[in-house]
Length: 62
Image (cartoon, rainbow, N blue to C red):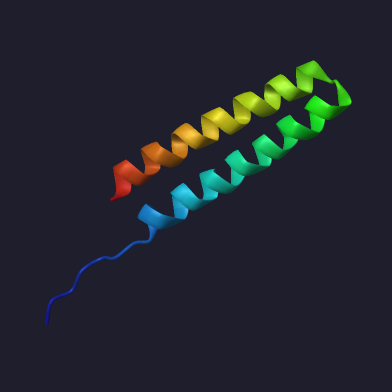
């Protein structure tokens, strides 16, 4: 009987960071319509950082 330690980190972390990236993009659009440039910039930074972390997590755990 072969035992292995399986983990879903290869799926879970990219999905988590992907959801955060989508929320950041929604914030970017929302604050873009209201004209709040500071909050829009922060939302853009969150979206880009989370998107990058999503790709990195996929490659690290796959």
